[in-house]
Image 1 (cartoon, rainbow, N blue to C red):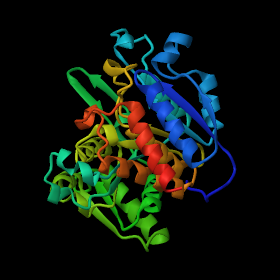
Image 2: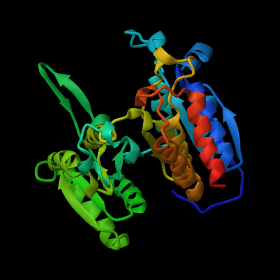
Image 3: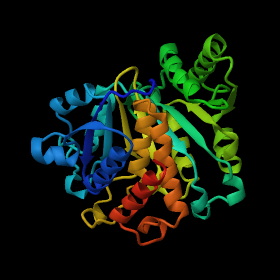
Length: 352
């Protein structure tokens, strides 16, 4: 899924979406232009697309995304499109349509507390010291996609995984690892987890024996995440467990305004987006924190475009700006979007 550094101009589809999306997208484009030369194609998604086209994701936009090198999404949703009508279009359908249409089966959520903001974490600073982990979550299988229904007063949801589904997500985790992979399952109870563990072990022995691998039951992993998060490098897990653990891990940083994410497929373009929502309450005021979007662009550079050096420059510039006092409102300060962007750009200029 990674590729070597290239001088070829990369084509990026920009999906600003709703709420603060257009504002933080503008900031992110300025940062990207400081580290490379890209072609941009800006399109509608989410509520903005519903207003214009009656659907959260048009076939045309999906086709354009599929032909790109990477897709950068800001945020979708807002009270304007809230409805109890099950047949009415919803902004979130745009995101789900992108995941499905682009075949994105691997969700990557890095958790790396910024040293200057260590006091913002609900955990003690000595506990989060050295924490720098990545949750790799299988995104298109498991109980969320299994057969479900009701029979009388009984309901059921079926968790199903195939060996090939486990193998492809495990490969993503091994490739992303620096010091080791912790595969999280519930193999003492669930048959799907036993298949999961067997498949991970087989792939490890066949192709990745140079990478350290250990296995952890999900309940223990949940405890270890809050007691010793720095022991993890890459956490590999299935859809439901990954949904819960990635949100738990996200709280280690203490600020959702700094969390990026990536969703990757097999050979096609990836989707990169901040974890936070569209924040309609502050949209248009110029005070949104653009840093999670900027860090999502750094993930795009690294995991989507193979531009590792540029990604490191962007991440370093964000860290440096925060260390030098950058605080947007959500971080307890008063810096607006333009100021935050300018501080990151200034530090990128210094390291050029």
